Image 1 (spheres, rainbow, N blue to C red):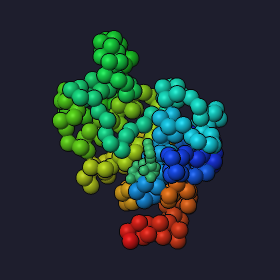
Image 2: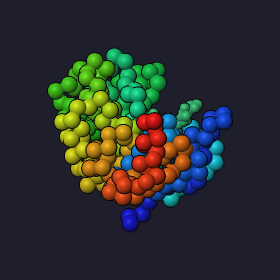
Image 3: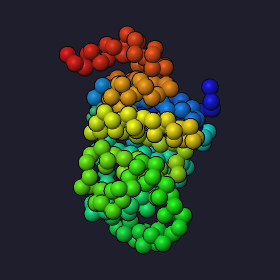
Length: 250
Ligand SMILES: Nc1ncnc2c1ncn2[C@@H]1O[C@H](COP(=O)(O)OP(=O)(O)OP(=O)(O)O)[C@@H](O)[C@H]1O
Ligand SMILES: [Mg+2]
């Protein structure tokens, strides 16, 4: 096994009486694509929020490259090399695709307006933006307002923006939601390439074909508990997992 890049140890996060995460532990090895699956409300997005510092863990710890990052602020965690996308796409109103790629991380409107003019002239930022543009095949929509584009392309803009931060770990929350079959296939190949180039990817996804064909390893959450883990083949036939999903359809 490659060394773990990210580790969660006994993480619990409560919201009032609800334990969105209950004693969750997992290891994300370097250079792998790891998936988190589970029914709606299982706690998947909450894991991302705890990792990125958007929410504090109520108990337990998060380690990145062996360093405890549990109590760091979101911007400090981003600086360690963790970038994310959002389940509900968060793009900036009125900004073109190209402008999104010059702003490496999400900021408030006031902040990016101050940042943009300097980054505009910064050759390193432009080079990173250009690379992300080409990687995600967004050259043709470079000067379009990002929010005016089809949903699948907006998702690509979000991923490209996350990549311009140069992360070691990329967290993707439902990356193929809103994508058609061809787009999802293309994205799968692209993520495999990024992973070969050294990126570690942790993704949440409901599209089982996508997950099973892409991930080296899976964790399964249900009602805040990690109920199963393993390679896709073993998880697919795990009785607890089948129960969780069938139970959800009742
Ligand atoms: N900020 C919050 N305040 C209160 N409850 C929350 C908050 N965030 C999440 N929860 C609750 O925590 C539980 C897990 O939510 P979470 O969004 O992590 O689920 P999920 O697995 O991502 O679901 P989905 O597949 O629908 O996106 C849910 O019961 C949700 O209502
Ligand atoms: Mg979610």
